[in-house]
Amino acid sequence: MTNELKSNTGNKSPKFGVVVFPGSNCDHDTFYVLKKILNFDVVFLWHKQTDLDECDIIILPGGFSYGDYLRTGSIARFSPIMNEVIAFANKGGHVLGICNGFQVLLEAGLLPGVMLKNKSLNFVCKDVYLKIENNETAFTKGIDGKKSLRLAIAHGEGNYFADENTLKEIEENNQIIFKYCSGDGVIADKDNPNGSVMNIAGIINKAGNVMGLMPHPERCSDSVLGKTDGSLIFRVLANNILN
Image (cartoon, rainbow, N blue to C red; front, top):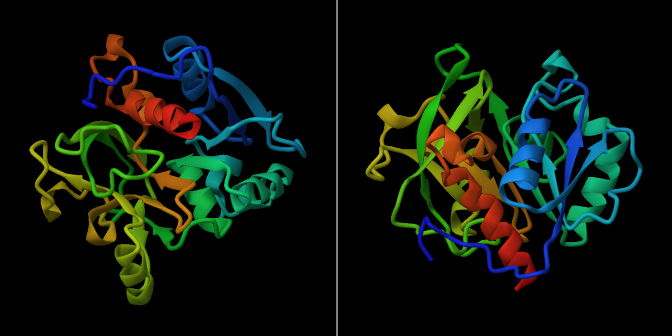
């Protein structure tokens, strides 16, 4: 498939659940893309819920859960719904964490590593390019891996870090999914917007059903904005879990 991917789900469609924490600010953007642009079944899941409303895919959206007053994602990790999300993930359910959602997944122990403040110590908001390092996952299989994806970032603590042993392990297990790169796919320090080790922008768990990434696919999914690469991640995920 190419970056003009079409949905092949036919009359079937997975049900997406977008978790809403106090301070989430990309929840409605994600809901809009899934519902209005991609025509998927989607519901909001309030953080105090104790069930996932029979959703097939859970998304932890971007924002500033609980104001990020401690470490990013550290309070949201203890919201009641996270017990359900963790159980869902441990049973093989697909979970996608975007920006702050990625940070929550790290705090919950569903993904390895931590987030540090950006190397510049500044909040960074701009478009970036990503190289797909593993296109055999449910989140990437079907996207043309030869083309860099153009997505948007907006974060102050997106500097991914892990110790040497963890990095070796995730590299050997092909858990590094996205790396920051140039528009033509070259990975270099100059294209690393936050100082993330090895230019890492997104990773997956060993089982392949939980992914976190710092860039925002929902902000690059509408042709009105002139950017649609983000929609590919949602489309292939929906397609792949049904096939």
